[in-house]
Length: 442
Ligand code: TRP
Image (cartoon, rainbow, N blue to C red; front, side, top):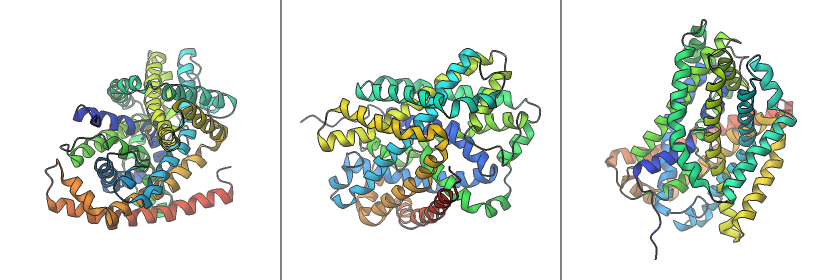
């Protein structure tokens, strides 16, 4: 029997996981959520969500994956708890729904690549966003983005893209550091920093019901948690890797990329259109960054490089979002891979027409407020209360953390994570439902 493949190096695994985590979530969604939810008040809750809930949740997925050596759907049965398969299936469903709107935002990135070449956004960055973010242009760009994603998954050339992402992450870091440094010199940058960094705790209290689900959803989304991908990635891990160590590196790197995006976006916003609770919206990052490229010397070229890099980061995510439902159907129905990838991609394309006509918020909140918390709640209950002996044993392997830390983690997963997620779900579902009935999404 051939041995199951494992990552050739620890760095290989970390790169793949960071590649999954870093994407539009960091550069588009994070500034968007922060700007829409009170700035620094959101940032505080978000950082708590990442480190107190996201980090232990990543360990939940890692223990399930490495223990079972299976993908998210087969993992539960492999461990002897087939009844829990639905928990993995929710993640696969979340991947599919996410793909539909992720591809629309990926389409925006394509439009900004075109805009960098033609110079179309240089004059009025806000107007350009308005013209490409919804309507036929958005549908067309979404079609191109998803077609490329389907092509890569159907023809199994994802390896090349994966390899490319190794260069993309350092490139994104360098570009963001450069942009943030330049942005710091702008007149009025100070107002941006204070909106981004000095929390007004009364805002947290008064907007608790909006901030908590947005921050928790963003934490899960950006760390790719609740989708089952981290289960699948960890299934290829060797037994002597330290799960807490790897997880800490992934969480910190991903957070650095998001924070840097904020350090670029907020001073630019402050210097151009102004920051404040009205400045939020799905266009936040695109308008701010394109506005900056409009003012920079050689801005068109820098913009082109930036959006091409962002496109690769987005593609590496969308491939994995399509891969999850595709391999599920291929494995369970025994259908041909190419047909399945094209079929699922086509359905995601049709579904994505809605966000391409302005319903990004609806899809975003369905995933952030409902699907991800539900998926995380079930895997936390599973690991905390059902497969806890296996999980604790797995967590201890290859790591130097002691029994004390493992026990704290277990109780954290049993009690704290479920309570936090249930509160999130209550608030998130309520606000989603209110949005549906009051027409806020429509
Ligand atoms: N974390 C990615 C981002 O921030 C998005 C994402 C969510 C993802 N789930 C995923 C990427 C699954 C790959 C696989 O953009």
